[in-house]
Image (tube, one colour):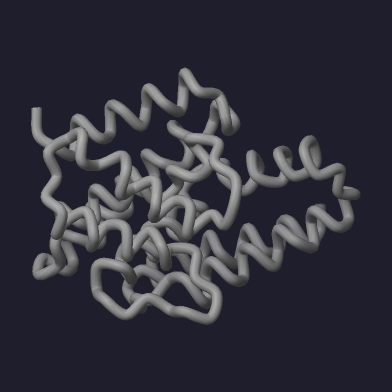
Length: 189
């Protein structure tokens, strides 16, 4: 079994056994990020597929392992602790941790092709399935938002995902109908 498959299996196990995040997270979100990363890699074969696919499985380690603190920083540090057990080189671990540290960027937009691919695959995954339904449900259950506030925040997230996190025009074009549909649906529901 290759390194990526072993990491994927460990993440799946941790998602199911540790229970720090909702049960839908692995099948709805992480598998969709993987699918979209592979799609983007086909379009951009010069990108480092090992780094990207490891980043797919590590980008939400902070949530999966139930760690306190900043999602990106704690996730990058956990990546550095998590990957050595699989025989990943220090050089690859550094690249993956650097991507994890920027995947949910604010003012620090990703610069490398690999980082852009992960951010884009992560955002694209939200349009693939019932992610937004699960997310708003989680918000309502955990944060006690009003429905009005949750809908407003969700529409803002949809806008952010599409307009700021999908870097490649061909990917935007692929998702444009879903983007418009989701945005309108959550505005009117």
